[in-house]
Image (cartoon, rainbow, N blue to C red; front, side, top):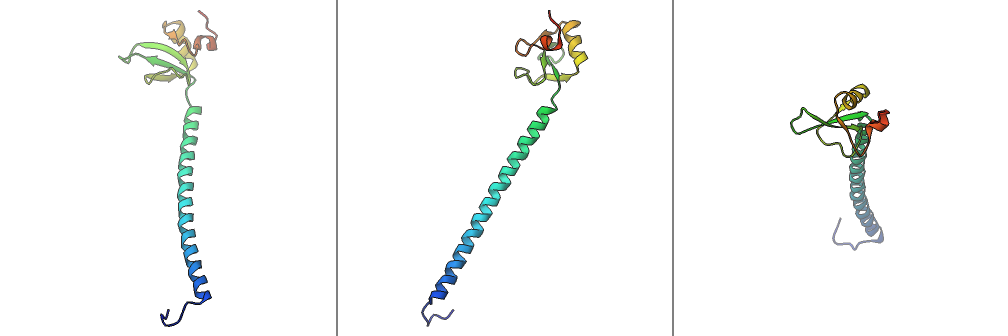
Length: 117
């Protein structure tokens, strides 16, 4: 642009358009980042839900030595510790009836399984 001539109204409008266009591009990039972040969070939520849905029906919680069973839990019991292992129905029934493993007092798997002491 030649510095000798004064800015016209058209020059100022074109400049304003370039400014708004740049701001719009930055705002769109910011919104795109927000969308990508939310998509990642949603994918994580969906993954956690899928894992929760595939949780075992029954759990056997083991002691610190890893061998002795402490409790039988209904799958998804909030008191089941990190040393819990998913088992099938027959193994849970066997643990409660034959092996003398205690039923969790919170989720009461013996009641759910129909085994009353």
